[in-house]
Length: 251
Length: 351
Image (tube, rainbow over all chains, first blue to last red; front, side, top):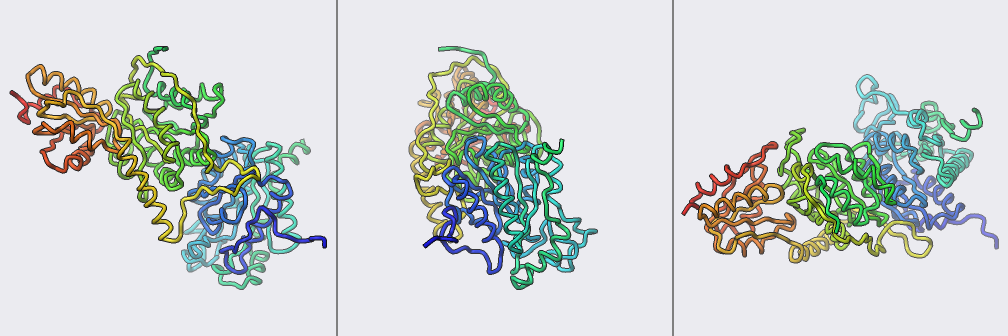
């Protein structure tokens, strides 16, 4: 009998700790599928952050490193520079990447570190119970913005792909979502392209994935997907913000 | 064997390269920048990597990444920069990774100054980051020892799978002395735990310091402390100079020990039975060696470039069985031999 759907080998067959309805599992799977399809599991080293995906080291079958909060791009830099022929990816949330790890993110990008960054944006600190993140939308209620995020007090959300697209070292900056099948297919393509860029030594590739957090948003999984579509995508438009290949073609 | 006149920082950098250091990640700070400058010039030609990080925080995490792959890796900084690295050092220790960290100490606290100091003794030996852990800490006292300890630090870091620190100071970093480079074997060792890609041949390795179950975390810490116990027995190292009949034993490490040594000689000329005890490792502290060196002493005198930090370890080592006095200068002021001699005389060492 032909197998039409199976668990990717790079994705460990153990229960995930994520909350019901959380889209981390989909994103993990997409990364693992790309590792399988490219046949690079034996040469891949993943770096997990501090946050909901802190235990991702148990979920991927390649070698994994658990980094301090925000420092995954620096850890990945050390790995890649020590072993330039390996494939290195980080998997980071919004608090990790865009608050405490902003400097590490920006400088890894501007150095053109030949790594892949999977950036999961769910507009909240999930692991610690739903506090304001750098990506929390104006008006969004969180544990630390109980009256809604007021830009006059807490400032504005960070649009990471737009910011990193200004840097010469960035090869790919693309924002995708995992709220629907077409978007998931698009997300997979972006992740594949990011890893292909690394294979071709093109530089820093970041794929920002808009993700849900039903638990901390106080919504059902289905309502959470609606919020992603109705509230997040208008603020964080999907698309390619920089593609070094497109720039070259356009020149 | 070649003999060259070199700055302490540069000699250390050269020795690190010869010992097989493949990656160096640093961030500029006085008075250690020559280490970076030297390696920036030489690493690539030697098949290694030099990278200037965006911060000390990033540099130590690059060290974590490179160490995870099993290569020999080093970073260096000076006091305020080491404080920034302490987060990463705790993670590196908790992940059982080997690396070498240089601290060419300057005056503190805060931005402090840029002159020599030993005021990071407590930080290095007792509190280099959050959690229960130690790092090996070597205290060189000459440019030659800067070379010798860096080679040893790489070997021992690999052997025990833990960070090793070289606790130098601005004097040792900046001064020039003749130095020879022994035949150094560039080693790396077998590291089956490394996360360098499993090549589809083995189970996946995980480099991690997170254990959410308290009993599992406790066991990992207790296991590490078993290792520390062995290290305390085997790796503590010290030099005893004229201690055999000494009634007053001056204790000093690093550059301060050089000043103290000439003071001891001057005291001997005056007929005072003085000796010098110089820890070459400050963690583990050479307690047994000190007990032996001070067996005939009436008084011990700790001389430090700080307000008195090593003195705690001296008191513990001898179980407070004898009076332990202190003389120190801090903030970048170097103690003068005359000041120390006055102290020895004041303590009743005069005939």
